Image: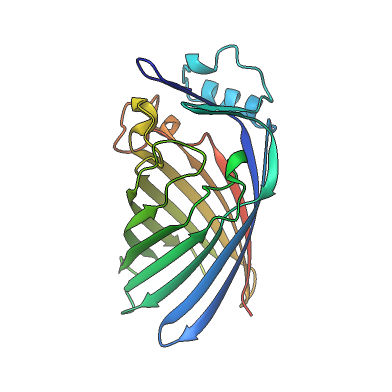
Length: 257
């Protein structure tokens, strides 16, 4: 929960997201990607795990004191409350061009297929572009830098849509051997909406770590975790990590054909 002088935001829920991604090479350094999602929002099961995670980090979070486990509740100034929901999310399509072996650019559009009245989608079209630049650092390490800009259509449900949202990321990849790789990422973006609550309106920055294993020439698995300012202890270093979801855990199974 984030509070301002007058306004406050309360968010206590878990999302289970099943995402399908299809990517097709078009030749001449172009490829097309489409993402679809099925979102289930509810109380979930991670509350006691997050509680133990905070204890492990010696993180005192008075906002969560007395909040029941398994609760699903979202309250945003001028909207809500929102509770459990199930449905498809917004569909996104992306076109990527490799300009050089190191430099790539992407343009994307998001279709408002999710139910905005249940906060399963934004309720409007969004567009974006970004550039990604890779810098090898020896035979096993590689840096990747990403910078982009999102143009958001006005939300049909929430107030204060931020029209332009700059984003950026720094990624360090390590190829340990022929089949195992590790990824470490810092990501920053502006808040999607402006609420008048300083905590929520500040830049959202999270840290992520992933493990990838190549199963064959055409198959790969990945497990990853992302977290907010907990990683750097009670948000004392907001330039590194501050506002974002509590631990996000994911699994990907990739098939090339």
